[in-house]
Image (tube, rainbow, N blue to C red):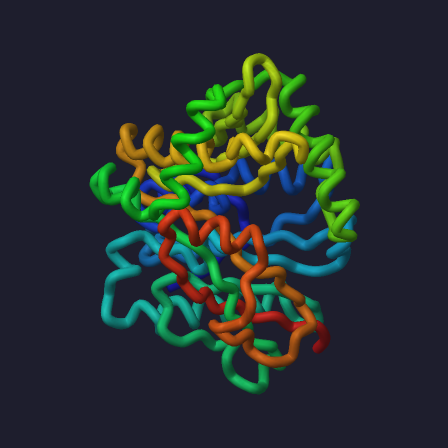
Length: 329
């Protein structure tokens, strides 16, 4: 095996095309946004080759601004690294290949730096678990729905309360559709910022999130869903899509219309829409607020926030994803 930090987009795409775990968060387009003039982060990239053939990538970025300034992030709840093509990811020595790759990447990019690293979903052991890496090991619980299930199973998994809320929203006139109109994005952002300001939590700036909206909807990597009551937009979901996987990335709602259950209607329409188009996995993302500085591994039985309980009400399966955080050398 040999490794290169030279960005070869053809090699990058070749890996994505042959990796079943490939997600939108692994794509060059995602990192083009992160390293754009609007966002300004620094790309950290390495490709693994076997006899000249690209067989895996690791890609992350160093935050050059924002609330994680200086911090390096590698991987997300939608997919960690290394991302290997299936032929290598399914080998008996896959963990050995991946850990050797991680060590090469870490020696080149992570020495003396603070970082967060999500390993590949299929890894059993990771080199960052060794004490000499000085990492905090955390469990980041996320929720997933298998869209390969029959529609009646998905409907049953909503349980009585969820099904009644979908029916109620429909009766009250809630309808949903996909749109790329900027005026609806602006409504979404108003409620997104308002809620996070009220909760005193961090949020992404307007210019950055608008760039993601405009770029990804144009490139076919995202759908922007809106729930309407008559002509009034009352709830919003920004869904990112790739490789038959769909991700629940950003959402917001008009607080005066929650009694109409627009989010329940949105979620049911989203599930059935992507199922009909042969998508296989719906990643609803996290269930709990995560603190980078927590020194103990998070307990799987830790309290779940309200938004996490909503995701679980959709019949989602919980997976505890390991991530490694180093806050100092």
